Structure formats: C-alpha cells, structure tokens
Image 1 (cartoon, rainbow, N blue to C red):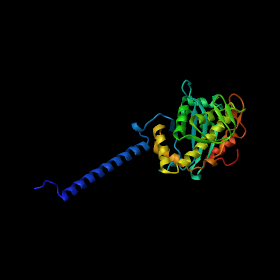
Image 2 (image 1 turned 180 degrees about the vertical axis):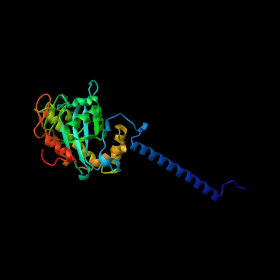
Image 3 (image 1 turned 90 degrees about the horizontal axis):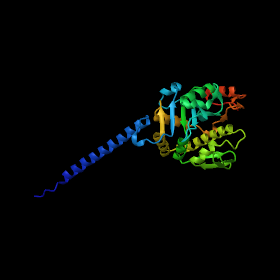
Image 4 (image 1 turned 180 degrees about the horizontal axis):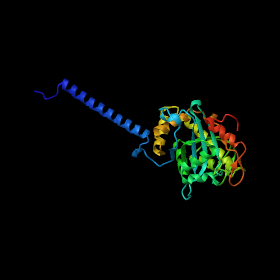
Length: 312
C-alpha cells in the first residue's frame, strides 16, 4: 500500500503553507508600518539614524493650526540659521539669519534677510546663537517684532551633508565671483553646484563693496532656489520618501515630530519660491549695523500676515 499523500492532503498542506506565508507577509508589513509610523512621529530608530545635519526646534504654538491634522493654517514664522561652527573654530554664531514668513491660507510667503552684524542689545545679533538657537530666535524675533515658531539650525558640515543628500543644488548666480577666501569662482547664470561650491557661494563676501550685505542676500537666493528644486522633487512619492528619509536620518528634532515636520514641508512646497520676495533688512553703516530708513515699515508689513504687500 502506497504511503504517498493523497491529492486532498497535498492541497491542504499547500493551503496551510500559503496561509502561513501570507501571515508572515502581513506581520512584516505591519511591523514596517509600525516602525515607519514611529519614525514619522520623531522616534529614534537605530538603523535609520545618521550624523546630525540640522536641528529643528518648535518654540511656540502656531495658533489653532497645531490642533489640525493638516498642519498650520494661520501665518507663522521660521528662523533659518547657518552657524559658523566647524572643526578648529569655536563659537557657533548665527552668521546666516533668514526669517521665512508663511501664510498657508493664501499659499504665500516672504523672506527677510538679517545681516549678521545688526546691532541688538549692545552686541551683534549673531552672538545670540552661541547660547543656542532658541536665544537666537528670541533675538531675531525681538528685532522684527514677530513670534518665531520654528528655528532650523545648520552648521558647515550639516550644510554640505544636506546639499549632497539632495544631489547638489541649482542656483542662479547673480554676479561674477572670484574670491580666494571662500573659494567662490562663478560666472553669472544658472548652474548646478556641489555641496562645496554651494558653501563657497554662500560665504563669498570679499567680492562686494558692501561685503556681508550682498552675501546675506545671496544666501537668501540659494535658499529659495533650493526650495524650487526640492519642490520639483516632491511632486512624486519616491521624491517625497527620499527627502523624508534624509530628514529621518539626519534631523535632530526638539518639540516636534518628523510627521509634523513633513506637514510643514508640504505647506512649504505648496508655495511658489519664484514668487517669494527675498528682502534684506534696511540698515545704516558701521561696525554694528543700525536699522535703516524703511525698516520699521518693512517689519510691520511682515508681521501683519507674513506677506510683504508693498515694494521694499
């Protein structure tokens, strides 16, 4: 008598194997979803972590927006800080200071560039960052008269890491650059920059009679051009995931989860960077810069709804 299993027995075994395999697949998918959900909410996932490129801190509520699942709906202000911390150099002063005001309801925004040598409370305003991004945000917010809700802080290594992470950045270089100090050697026009070239572009001040003023404005140009590039990359799911993965591995979050950061990103990428005014604060000369004519009206226009309505 044959010991071979009958057809019905074989079918039952195959069925059980398929059920077991299906259960394993479902369990794996659910496990991945759970990890991804924790990651989105700012949890530290060991295998997903990398060097810190930037820190993002939430400083103040953005009104009723905080309770909504889609993110802020009322105007809010973000301070973008590039600090001068790098190997062999102490400090961590806020040498690049830019405030982005966002009006989600109107899908509009404006940006004000703050020269690092602006006077504030008897010293230069960039000194505040040596006490941390929160103090820098308090100083800049006090100068402009706006509540800073978020501060994003990045150093030299973090800047180059981010630019490398997105594959370089395309910038419309406004003028000829030939600066041996920063290493900026560019002709005017649109060109794709590596991380080191982007850093050189953003540091060049020796090519210009007004030095740091032009550099500050050029940094604003780079920020908005980078936003345009990222906005284009975010038009599909793979692009969104790559950017989210970059932030997940390299962003240090304080008071905000990656899920909320993603929502803020969605708001930012709903804007047209080409329509965002990039205005450098009016100033008066000297080693410590005072507020120039028109600064008060500029700040008032900005704090009203984060949109610069009139030319400045």
